[in-house]
Image: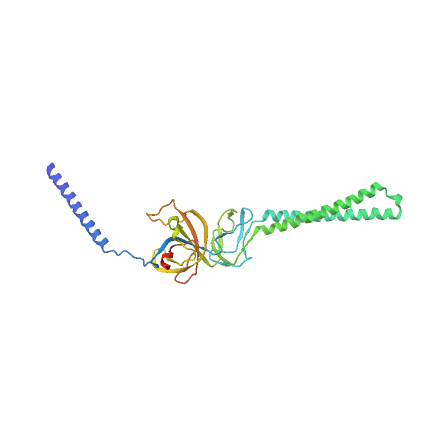
Amino acid sequence: MKKFYIWIILSLIGVGIGIAAMFYDNMLKSSATVAIPSVKLPFNSFIAGTGIVEAKSKNIAVSSSFSGIVKAVYVQSGEKIQKGMLLFEMDDTLLQSNILIAQAGIKAAEATFISAKHHFELIENFKNVSPQMVTKEKYMQAQDHFHEAKEMLEVSKAKLAALKEQSNLYKVYSPINGIVLRSEISRGDFFDSRSNALLIGSERVNVRVSINEYDISKFKPGTKAVAYLRGNTKKNIGLKYAYTIPYVVPKTNLTGRSTERTDTRVLQVIYAAERTKTFPLYVGEQLDVFIRTPEQEK
């Protein structure tokens, strides 16, 4: 009886192995028929680099002079902006309270000044009519009180002017003509003045290309370059050389390829790019860039 069950179990195992072998064979056949996409290289001699799209003005993190609660936001991501346009306001409740207190202080200082002035003028008139009626000490006291009241009024007005000037710090304006690249602030949020919650930049874009250090000797400033969209080798765009940043830095833009080294340093080269309908280019987008080497030009 035991042998019978053993034979049944062995038969089931054999059937399972057979089915697995059939699936494996089908997978091999199907994988053999998959076409591997090929890239038509733009130049006979070139170096490749990783490009990242950035605003020509650089990506500007707009901030306020201090951290606090956001009172109002007037722009959103993707919106075009003009230089001097109000972007957002910080809550100024405490400041407005201080302004009201300062205004009340001015009224009190004005009343004190008017009273001191009237008293001094009265003492001065008495002295002019009859010098014996006003002692020198009394005259000097009235005069000092008048000057003190005048100075206090001027100080109160200066404090109010300073507070009103400070109110401008609660409003954040655009420093350039351009576009809002990213807005992650809303009314009522706590805004950290060191954050990158609001990014703006020019509408024109550049491509920052990182050239690995072992290819730097092959690079010649001013040479042509072509950029390809990631995952779409049929779309490419010509790039125009702008300038080279003469400082080699550690590589930070990783492609994710298994052959990529992470301990490499790179030379960063800036190329100008033109947006088109078929090649819109978004800030932060990575591109595959091929730069012609001098050997091709000879």
